[in-house]
Image (cartoon, rainbow over all chains, first blue to last red):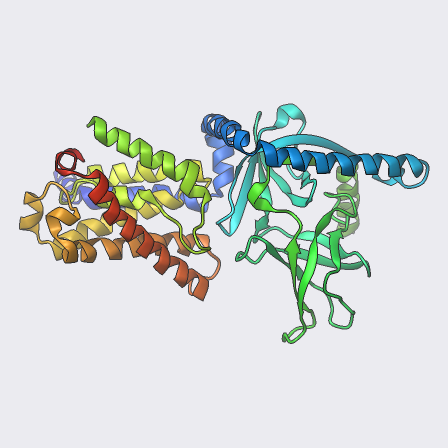
Length: 270
Length: 170
């Protein structure tokens, strides 16, 4: 026992070091957000409140820009209302299962390879994990974790997030992913080389993942490279969403998503 | 003591609300955290500095949504700093110094002390954060950020750490 105490007092600096390294590695290895939502819910609340306060100050300086943006959005929505009422009996029914919840962005990271966004709505407002998030300019991401008053979104600027997409002109199925370098550019994956692809084509969501409705804009093709050693093109697209000034987002709740997922799961199992 | 707390809060405020969201010239991230770690009082094999750096890192982590990343980096820096200072300054001289600043160490020795630590700080961060550590982009990020931070560290010392304050910065 005496030897043990002697050993500890001799190496207490190293023991403290290894203990602290163990704790921080444990935090690092366990997904940050799991830990945060499970054990640090109160800290999430405090930090969420701090970020809300910060946003309320910075928003004041962006009022003019926001006003212009709202005017534009208003115009677009009015156009949509007119179009919808014209086609009330044929087209609008197909989007019937989607409800929209509005939220404010209170924190948004851009410089990591796995970026996340925090918003000021949570389970109290009906938000659930896995819901899609868009803004008036395009796709933003998907809900990752939800607490009572706040939610975190896995951003489109996250290298582990893939969105099922279509090239609008040819309806070619593809996938959009970010490669971790430039926040304004995304990669369009799995477009076979035998298909014709044109620069400037619009990329939209496909609705195959049941997260987003079909036709939400993701970006436009800016460069096509066929000189790669693979069956697919190397295509770069410019993101329609400017993540630098993201402030208002819409969370999409697809009420039929669970039903679709369960049916597909049952089919896979057979 | 009061000056310390004000400076610390100012740096924390800067990091959380401004510098966390800014990427200068696409490559440079300024981090006052490493400045705090470098200018923190030095004592040989001090458990206190390890624990302080752990909690400091944890505090930045919570605001940065990266639990574990900064705390691990800070502990590694703190541990390496302990060994590095003994090697380059020597045990006898460190006992006389209240603080390892450019005034007490001199320009060259301060560079030898601080620059490798800043490089290790950014290398550890990008090792965990980026997908490909040895890419050109990443190496540019490490070298440019380290250089910018070192220059700011020197400016910071000349601006804020006057003689009175440097004695109190503990």
